[in-house]
Length: 267
Image 1 (spheres, rainbow, N blue to C red):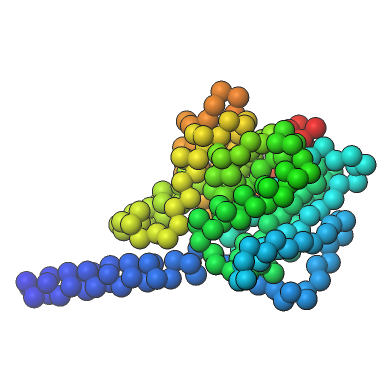
Image 2: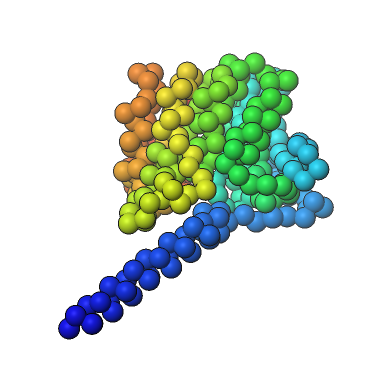
């Protein structure tokens, strides 16, 4: 009997270690699902846009798509930081939320996604976001710049808004921190020591002076509502947390409440 118990204990410990090792070394493949594109690839967007590149060094090149508004004089620009999947070809469908309200929409492609190349690191992403902001500042004052993050991009957007002024910080389906989100899925592992990416949005929002608006759905199966709602306690009196009843991680754009609130901010 003791031998059987000991054997089961060894199997459980071995499985725990093997899964932990896999999580550590394969976390990039688990977290990120980019779709790279050839430099010669031509986007077929219906909205008017232009494509620019921001060369950081010999290996890092950031591809940016800038969607134009039909308004003769734009109200400003939305710096849009997208999620962990695909590329701008997928997220371009959301540009109209802003361009129809008179705002240009600039979408930054992360290294390894779309046509961007180079090293993908947490600190690198913060630096790339800052480069996009600096480019926007050559055309717009801070009160005409909106920083927007979706899913993965919420941590990047929150960090940028914590170090640079803007009109609004808008977060769609954010996490409290990447560490807390990982702990939700893998509670038996010391994820704070295992993760290569932490994105502590909870720390960043404390230093954001601009108004913050958060959108999250109660039916989110990727970033649980229970994880995101913890950010509400950190918000300033003028900030707002908008709950979309039944909304899932990628369906908030289908809800009238989402558009009503977003349009009211942009108008």
